[in-house]
Each structure stands twice: as structure tokens, then as C-alpha cells.
Image 1: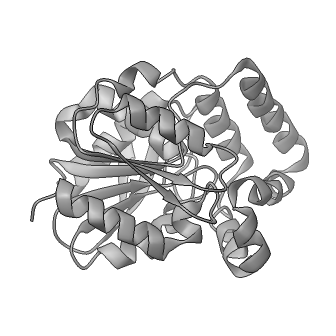
Image 2: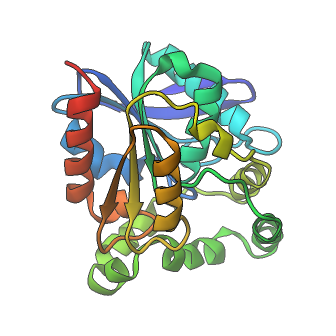
Length: 265
């Protein structure tokens, strides 16, 4: 399915029936990264899986893909799909989007799942590295950049023992274009610091960390856990930044347990 949102079209998929669950993927993947988990949950929940702008089948639109634009896109998806209130989960950039969505549309949020993400903005060094990658992709194309992401985003244990999963993770990046990478990176580079937002979150919240995540390490998850009153913290062992894809059975069990308490019906 597709829905118009400002200057682009946002693609999304829906699986199952029941209380609404919306899952946002990380950069530079697409909605398929959540499919193994979504398929396990679809017998009880209606799971909506967007391609964030600039990813998968959703073009980036004009200019940086800011968190404000992503949050507006997410609201449009909810309107189009008839989602009044839902539990929202996001990995990495998906979490950044959810902080902005919470600030703008908290009345639509029944619960939050913040997976392998962080609340703080980029450091100056991090911002410079993002913008340098934009220049590099413009010169060399997306493939070398995407190939290099696997070592950072997929955990060491998965890369060593399950190269098939690492290869499948790489395939979720196949739709990324030069323009998509550029505008998404530029949007993340200017995202606000969401640390002050954490104290305002007053819905059931699950924080998930990958034991081997080098992008959003466990320490970041622990900081969020301390800041969000009543939140739950769960760690997926032997998994990296893409933990929910690397170990979908463990992720599904953690999420199912959380939803059993956070969602009625």
C-alpha cells in the first residue's frame, strides 16, 4: 500500500488482525527487516510495516528526511490505515522518529518499543562522518557504503556463525539509492537531542538492546531505561544493532511478553 505524504509516497505493508502494532525499521534497511518478527506476531496483532522515506519503496522526497517529516509520514500512514492508537516500535532511526512522533502525536501512542536506538543527537564528529559518507556515496555509488555497513550493524556472532542472516540483512538494503542515503543521512545529522523527551514518556515502554551492538551500545539503553519511568529493559544476547532480525525468535518472545501487558485485546 502507498499513501501520499507532502512531497513523496510512503509504502507500507499490513499483516494480521487485532490490536495495532506499528514497527519502524533501521537505516539503511526497509520494512522487510521486521518481517520475521511481524509474521510471528500477526496471529494476534495487526502489524503495520512502513518503508520510511528514502528507504525501500518510499522515495526520499525533496531535501533532508528530517524527523519531523518522518513523523508526519507516520501520522499519514495511521490515518490511511485507520489506526487510532497503537503500540509503536522502532529500531535505530525508527526510534529517532518515534521520539518526534511522541512529541507531536502522543495521544496516538499506547506503548513504545525502543530497540537498538539512542536518545541523544549526533556529536560534531558523528555529524561530520554522516556528511562525509554522503559525499562518498555521491562519488562511488551506494554499493561500497552498504557493503561496509554489515560489519557495524550485524553482530560479530551472527557474522561468524550465521553468514546467511548477514547476507539477508544486506539484501534489505538493496533498494537504497544515492539520493535516499544522502537525504536520510542529512536528516539524521540534524535530528534534535531527545534526551529531555524521555522523562515525558508515560506509556508502557520496552527498551531492547543487542549485546554486541556497537552503534547504540547497551550503555545507551541503560540510560534510557533510567530516564523512562517504569520502562522495561531487555537484552538480546549474541546480537548487534540489527538484533531483532538476527535473533527474531528471541525478539518475538520479548515483544509478545511486553504486548501481553501493554495491550489489551
